Length: 333
Ligand SMILES: C[S@@+](CC[C@H](N)C(=O)[O-])C[C@H]1O[C@@H](n2cnc3c(N)ncnc32)[C@H](O)[C@@H]1O
Image (cartoon, rainbow, N blue to C red):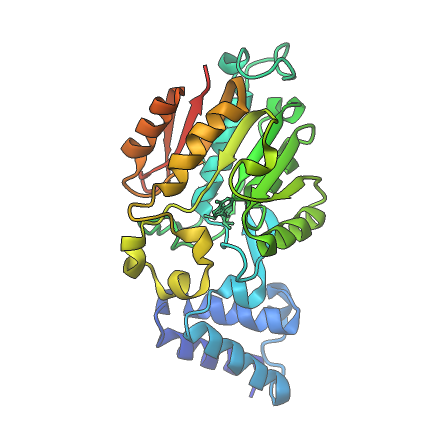
């Protein structure tokens, strides 16, 4: 058999599975992962012979994918905001929707109108108005209700120039693979970034990803804001668990059977973590500081009410590319 024939056979098997639309792409990704080669190499070696142990290993990878294992867990790789991340079943696979949260955060720091906000340590006061950053461009973003279903990587739009000089402090609650904290640290080289997670296994992956992306972040183990008691931050960001346990059966097999439940579920209506996180974040922000939260489908009104009840004002919503409210930002007066 040639590589071309093996690839076609793998794609045909995946084509009979739950994702026929991406069968060819997945088969190619798995083959390249196995061979440790890139696509350009493959295109010039399609007629090479392929068999023996490697062909058996390729068949095993196809079987794992057919059984519903996310391709990112099989390859151990994922891209978020244009940066490479290592992922294992200990962490949620970072979603394209979450790139809106990074974008909204960078936009806050770029807005001259916000210059009185947060601490006086911002470096943007004397600079010119910011360039609009725009939404992250995605090749395809067929989003599920929860934002947990999509896997296509997106391209970053680049960091706003004013944000690069920002010197404040950021706290990422529920950092998982470190996706948000690391993307922000990458684009805000002068910021001091702290990231918390209840999962020690997730923190080990985040540590690995920080090293891989050459950023320094402080990683703390614990429940929500408990590990930073007594500290104050200019910005608090979070993509917390927000799936209602009642919606468990609406999740795909990939998500339900493979991603960590600690990263997904937050009580009967998915609001349990927001209920504890929002008042604690208010108390931990400096006056003028911002909170930036990812939210699930249909949660915008409820989370806005929680923000208002905690004392936040200037609440703004950012929709995802499907028009679903996905990110809320709010300011501590
Ligand atoms: C939806 S995942 C988000 C991961 C990552 N921020 C991202 O966007 O890809 C939620 C994360 O919150 C963590 N988590 C859940 N409950 C927590 C808690 N009470 N305190 C701290 N972290 C928590 C989970 O372990 C998981 O890593």
